[in-house]
Structures are given as C-alpha cells and as structure tokens.
Image (tube, rainbow, N blue to C red; front, side, top):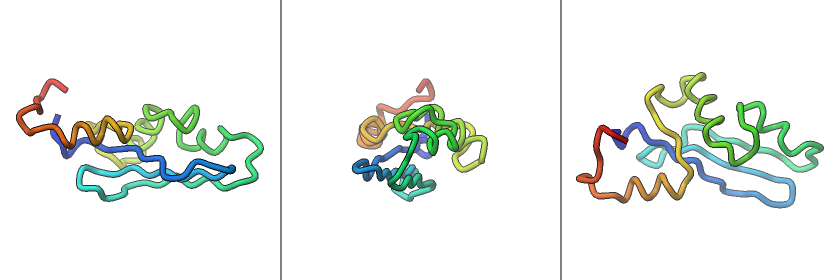
Length: 98
C-alpha cells in the first residue's frame, strides 16, 4: 500500500468530559476533527454520529470518512502508533501486499 493512502487517528485531549481527536494524512495535514464537549449524558452518543461504537473505534470512523469521501476509498485509517510506525518504516518495507 502506498504511503499516500495511510491516515492516522490521533487523540489529542481526553479528560474531564472533553475529547478532541484528529485524522491526519501522511504529510501531517489534518483532514478531519472530532470535538466532544463536557456535560455528556451518554459518552458514546456523539461518537455514533461518526459511525463509531466508541472513541477508539478506528474502523467505524474509517468507514464514515470513506462514505463522506474525506479519505480515499482505498485508504487505510490507523491508530497513531501504527500510523507513525508505518511512516517511519524504510521505503523498502512497503509493498502492494499491505
């Protein structure tokens, strides 16, 4: 898979009823943001808007972003640690089999 088809999901803030995360492309540009304020009655209700079961549901978010054409249909959304590991991998480690 080409590095241009990878996207990373970063949780930037998750405390005291506030949540902020973003999705970045391989150049580090934010392509989507999730902001959830405090005073939530049901923590998962706002994440369901993005087809997510909870704030860690990367596959649900990936489907939502593809359906909205925010990320490419052939793209892959990864949690930040896997995304950064892939970005740091030598180019020889990339193959079409990923």
